[in-house]
Image (tube, rainbow, N blue to C red):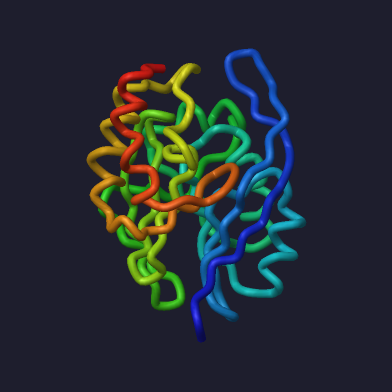
Length: 209
């Protein structure tokens, strides 16, 4: 079967450091007609289940552990039997949202996850969060960047567990080395390409945080 990327937008809140904001999140589903993985189970397990449309869910992959990206993960896992995967450096953030539930497995830099014959390579890209990861799918000409890279700039680094120089290093060393035509599918907002974002790196550094 042909592998495809399905896109779902869910709405909820993001909370950290005593503040709460309304947010819309991108949920990405990668797979074929029989099986899939979910990248970032945000806000609404029911909506994600509907989008899966009966497919077997093999894994719930967390790009990082801010609550708006993981709040629906345990409920989705309970209803599908899928394993939740998270980089261990983000466990302190995970425990803020789910103190009584742990992820089922770890993501590590260079790890390859395969779904429906398509490889997703884990790239550890700290900065927005210590355990932030991106997922590069060469066969799909795509990288799923969570909140590491958006259209027009890097993810926010003004809150706890984040660091601007670190996210710039991650983008420069791990993402801008990908082919320029690679489609960047983000955690919020519109998609872009590596080639479109590359010229902005010097501006990000000059602007600071």
